[in-house]
Image (cartoon, rainbow, N blue to C red; front, side, top):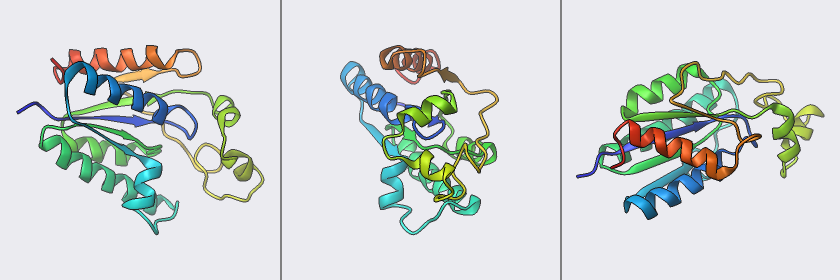
Length: 176
């Protein structure tokens, strides 16, 4: 059986997690003939974490649910990709412990760029006080201290970012 692993994308809303994760998944399927599952933050919130709000406790619960599913998939040889803001270091570290074969990708993009990309208007609503506890505005985002990969989506193409990630995943021995 092939070795399962999880690529855990973390970064602000609008940083490019979903966009890059989709290309990485597509390339793993095509180039390595692997089963790949994407656990996208927005999709998980709709289906697995419906009813959770955005308090620290609810965010932590959401991330632990994603980590639990990712651990099951990883254990069963699936290439798993998560794309969720996951703003708190402590809970990302718990996810790492739970999953094991874990590649943290920090999608580092300046707040101003994320706000410019915001097609849903969430940052504007947060700045206007209509959304409380919005990550990067009135709730903290704790950047990873030692991620396996850092991508800069404001300076790299989606393809360059995906290549960086795939190169690291290969280097770590998860893809052959």
